[in-house]
Image 1 (tube, rainbow, N blue to C red):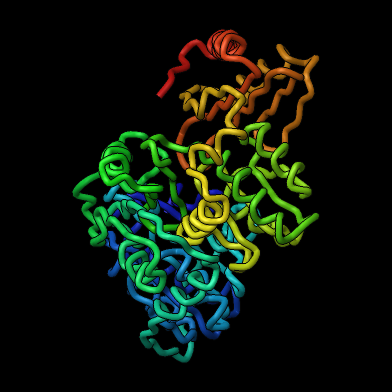
Image 2: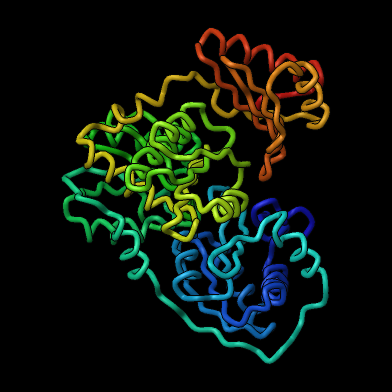
Length: 448
């Protein structure tokens, strides 16, 4: 079990890091941790997902819980099931966008409140190491909430007009859901790509952040004369957008775009944005009359902060977008709906809608392998000690005309650098300068 408990969830290589015996122990400990009587379990399409979900359910049943088996579902649907079904908690067996040899668990309490590294996962890890408890066995039954879930998200569609949408489901769990949604909105024309769930990922990994995975989608958008392209990750809680020209749309700018739109009907509301986001994002929130709040990175942390702030909406650079009206959970399909609502309401193409936000040059996220992350952060803080500095998540260094954030990844053995400036010339200069400071502190640094 060493190393599979992460900051946001549980992930490991199957079967040498995460196997059925471990999943069963986790299921048993999960029920004991929550004192749960009723839980719901879902899984994605990975080849190991069914056996891991079954083992988790066996452990939960042995601990005395009744288990509802939701079958193959998306993470947003599983979150909806926890809330709508009034369950004491739920488990989603998925490794999201990671390769096919990986699997994992996303765990949540009542109301789909996630367990995380500072909210339950360390205690769960300790309990997994204890002897499993055998109580009066619970039961297991199947539950199908797909129609109810699609009805819920379809309820957010506003004044649809004829739009053509190319959807690349990446052979993931958006596949069964998207066509059902489009059946309810006849004004929209769906051009499907890789809709059939397939845990072998025969076409490409389901990771919309990787530009290599969206090239075919970009070409298809142009070929179809489509209004938008949407790429989903494996469990459909994230999405990436392609504009009508076939160009990728920056995920942080989508946060600003949707925030401005939602604030029209919710003036003064709070919107969270992750601290890697462009300065254009808080500026867009302010223009919309909202209250912008910076957040540390990670779905579990953002969901907790959203509840504390009663935030209307939140967005991350990773393509997670969160909605108060969906129980403070992230939802890729609802994000697609909101962008289509916006295009319909404005009567303008996505490229024009995003252009006012796209005025700060950025490096994008640069992944670096370093031998000593603490040494690197210390060196950077010393070099830029005259800046505005905060340590909400890693190190953020700010000047009036440029800024950067560097932080440890919670999912990979790298540090991640994001840098933004007012001009391209300044961006190039400061990128070279910051990377130079990092390499001086840690000569073995490599960009990966």
